[in-house]
Length: 560
Image 1 (cartoon, rainbow, N blue to C red):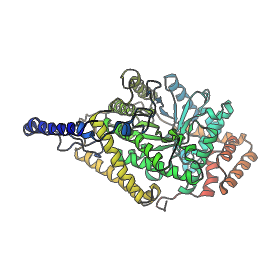
Image 2: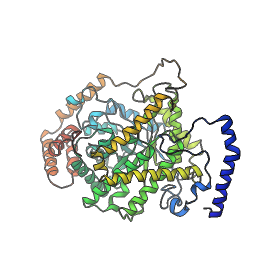
Image 3: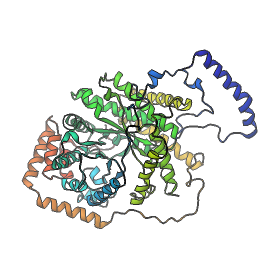
Image 4: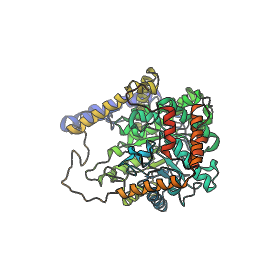
């Protein structure tokens, strides 16, 4: 971008500026901190950035135009000028009836996509009346036991007019089967179904722990979904490879990026080993990142992610289809950054995090409710969170040009630094045999835990300020309208489950479950058998029990 003589002149001028203008001011007044770093201390932030910091940058090779390799500036040529990101508020609580009501409310308020939260029993493959589900039914999301519940959730919502993201992992095949079954009932062509299942089991072993089966059968289920959806539901994203929970567990931005792409590499390798062609399934891969506090670090992370995935797919896997090399991602603002103290401050935090996601080119976005540090968000909080996105889209100007921070000496330099750090981490992962092996050795977990520990020490010492928590505190006894799930709500769900069991054809259920068992023992694709089972109103727990019995359960502390 600049010739060597110009760069040398700029460096000399920078040194002169520092000596003549900066040092006298520092000698007299000092600076707020001896060292400035990005949010999690991943990169040191210089006082000033100049063209010398991006002197090696080649526009075509390192940036490219939006919609062109290496996609640093975005995967779409017109950015948000053609179409805004999908505003996809994460929702789901208590019973299917309550969730249906919330979905209709959000759609009426201008939300453009649905995002489905499931309660912990559903995430773990248990029915609401299972002893393991006691006290947790409907607490962290909606309880889904059978196809009847999924029918209720989407009552009055045509599946050919919305896209739905489902944050479900170990039982993802079952919930996807239910969604397809509802679409079949509505007469929707499967090829028109749009949405995403999270379906990211490697992240569960590393950071979140809602796993069921050991890795080998888990990878089989995932690759069966890849194969089935490539043929049946080509517009449905078959996995959302998630860095969000890795960041929530305490990682740096570079660790989030490296471990997420590392998991992506594992999934691609597993699918290829299962006999799939990379260009058949790779266009349906999607990613899920955290939107954290440091605006510039987050923008750099998103830009680096696109460039890295393009290079990984091209160089490691020889992908030919351009869509196989385009990293598309959903962003959720950082739940771990919400505070119970002075919760109104969370509205501001979420707005800045959302701005970073939009400046970084996200394809869809969830903004947290201010009260999510305390409970499931109320209707008022959800509306404010959605309005945050709508104001950002229609009033801020952030969506009017593509990749607006491109060319910033700081952002371009930081993009390179985050990318370099992430590649260093990926190299360390490769040296340990890949993400499965690195997680088996607990190496990945230790990296995250060490970062989280260091951050907590900084907060406790006051080195890192969290407004309202360790600085700028007030005496408060806030009155909050907290969303609650009652015992009556849980009883209603269990009663409905019992009525489904009484009304269904038990022989048909047993036949489909036995067919699923035989399929699990063989090597045929599992999805058709799971769809048959859910259409017979077999429950999530019954289907997952069959697979538990055939595949076993992963036990923490055993070899991955």
